[in-house]
Image (cartoon, rainbow, N blue to C red; front, side, top):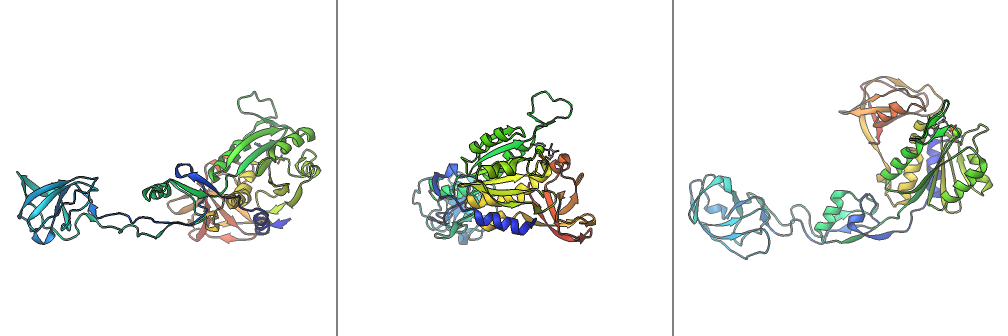
Length: 392
Ligand code: AMP
Ligand code: MG
């Protein structure tokens, strides 16, 4: 049995980023930038009004002052107006500032009298003007290689006129669930059988990573059907198998993988839950064997599969980190011989364990949003500051 850290670095050593690809920015959501991006334009691109109102010269604007309205500038093409002290230009949000104007008075703060306005407030230079480049300077980095593309990232690139971009590879994944006791939801369940729930769990987790799940199939604990399912699964970049990776007579995954020529790099890791975790390769496909217990599958996914998938997708190491700090609500101690991932809820900065801390306890997991890792023998007291992995 190897340590969790050793297992993770072994997995990450074996995994290489996929080749980058060019996509329309509207298709880039959830991918990772494959190069640095820099601002082509400052933001804002020109001085403009932050309000509907009147552009003015602040030095001629005291409360009670009367100004002549000499024209109008709406958002859009610059009419190239210019004003002098004592004059005003009707202006709208986002419209370019007229030459000579250095402030905007909100329309709510003036009284309109024919082609003049009377100011109900004093005006300072810069009032309600969005200065060119105040948000972003030309040439400034807007997106770093390896950073996740989020909705606002796409908006920022669009604001720079980009139509497409280079992102990391599209990871294709297959899932196989194993177990004679498992029945597909929707079908009739007989005594002793349970509904199969890991494949939808893994689909959701892979989806969250930004991976395309190409297939999810169920397989009996039977060598021939497992061979056929694995042969189909390894046509993808990664294959995630759940169940059947332990040591019972019905746990056929490891032997079947070996019979297909798999190189098994890892089997059994000091982690609780999740000990029977397996990692290997068949040809170019990375194969993960996760324990069948739902919580074990979840935790080993987060600790080993997620970092591997994100590396394949071209994520920077910073993007792998889920850690946030929290105040621990109760005393906790890890009495087991393996590091323990405690499921819990992080709310208002406080982490409290939730539900039964056993590997089959799916309800508790469903109520959790964070994990606290306790090393062997580690004890933490309520009120202490701890780092937790926030997964939701
Ligand atoms: P295994 O790893 O195959 O020994 O399974 C361990 C436990 O997890 C058993 O109680 C299984 O019934 C359960 N289990 C295995 N696979 C799944 C699955 N896909 N969905 C729900 N429970 C499962
Ligand atoms: Mg099984």
